[in-house]
Amino acid sequence: MKVVILAGGYGTRISEESHLKPKPMIEIGEKPILWHIMKEYSYFGFNEFIICAGYKQHVIKEWFADYYLHNSDITFDFTAGNKMIVHNNVSEPWKVTIVDTGLDTMTGGRIKRIEKYIDGDDFFLTYGDAVSDVDIRRLYEFHRAHGKAVTLTTVSLAQQKGILEIGPDNQILSFREKENQDSALINGGYMVCTRKLFDYLKDDRTVLEKEPMNQLCADGELMSYYHRGFWQCMDTKREMDYLQKLWVSGKAPWKVWD
Image (cartoon, rainbow, N blue to C red; front, side, top):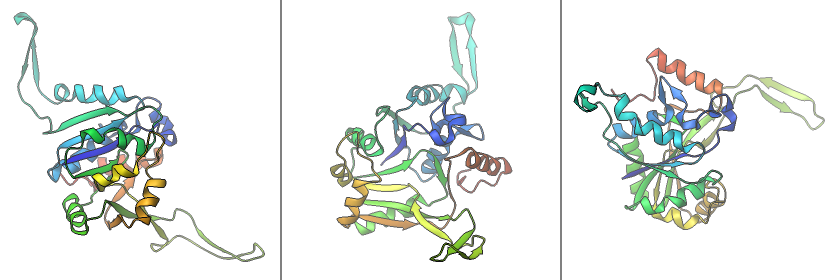
């Protein structure tokens, strides 16, 4: 079963890093966040990936081209016709297809462009800028049980600021700090889709999160899998630093693999 990862955007909200590389290639613990996402899927036994690239897509291709080389002990024997001897192979059991889905293509358009690479009834779909400890197997079992077109993982996004109650005359009636219940459910990615999704995608200008999602809702084809565990996107440098701190501490919640 294929895992499709959206990795083609500009990443403008974290421009401190993304002016040099695509956001999914920004490193957490010396490995791109894309690698972390793939490691989680691989832990649950899903090792075939389709990466929807766009902005600076060559960086992604070059990183994977060198992955085997950079993660093995190698002898270069120049006395034997520039022979290369690999002493150990510690690369992942992955099959990775990187597709240039266009520089300015929207999310729905990127998915539409990789339709020809999907050879089964179901596929995973997620964003290349968020990590989680969601149980991929249970997510898939939930999806198979209800039989709808798309399941998306929903997570709680806590309020970041103090909460105000304002009266009709603009007088502030109350002020309190955020609490655990002050949250909204959002799309955390980690989706499971059937091939029906492609019927909702028109062209490169299609934004997955707009008309297709709204139409899926109207047709009763969109289901929520609520995840109570860890989830964190990396939209800003502050969030990048937070993920880095967790990784360095040795207690990164999304590291479910050994």
